[in-house]
Image (cartoon, rainbow, N blue to C red; front, side):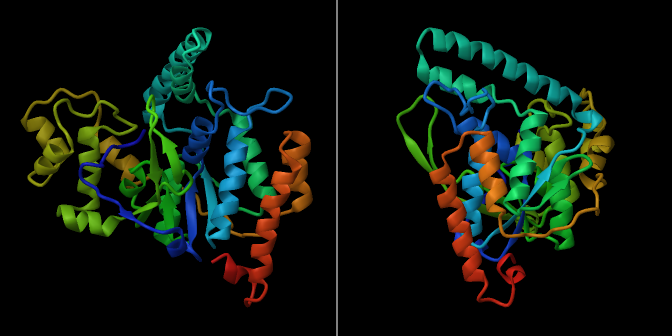
Length: 342
């Protein structure tokens, strides 16, 4: 889930057209889980091909990127590497929550409580290595670059944004800010109408942008202090945080003293090392071994992968590819395809 900072940070709405010509590093795992969670049948069952393989993530990946590229956005997907040891407890807890949700889903289906079943099914979403590999294959066929992070995808995206190789990082989580991304875009891959759980209501979900420097200036703190606020309220490396401390109280304390001093002076019992967690956000592992190159999609390979291997509708996929071809044709009137891809 990442660090929760909505009480302190108010994103600005941003239109897709304002992102035209921008290279954006997208947290791949975050987006794929969103697709797995939202693209489901009314019973909660994910989309599957004739061999029983889940395809919800591929559907979301294909059609969402057609939209993004039509807007003139150049997406690059950053995939997680090996999770750091400090994240082990969170990974284990998430796995247990998914197992429990999966059991509740089966019971709800049996009792024909389909609304509950869909909610539990979304909570039980699980991204396998095979799904991640298939996602990389599809992106490759579509001409969209991928970067394999050595560790956290969000930290790699932030690193690339700080270097200026991309304009912004995109994720639903706020962690990218703690990692130092100068700009964070939320709702990039899940914009549209979203149904509220267990309610017959839909809300509009639109892209939002957060500027790190604006946040720090507004709060009157440094990025290191923002990390320490995260430590107080809980991160993926210390999920429980400090009991009784919300974002606003944490902000007040951090303006007086650093997290370690506060914990020592108030004799707060904690089961984590503040210095160790700060290092995860301020001195993280990344790679410079990547090449960002956007190409026109390979129609034959994309059709073969989606339609022949995974039973997608040829008509729908052809329409999506035609939209990309039309965009590419429009780009040819510019100096080069590179000009279109930002």
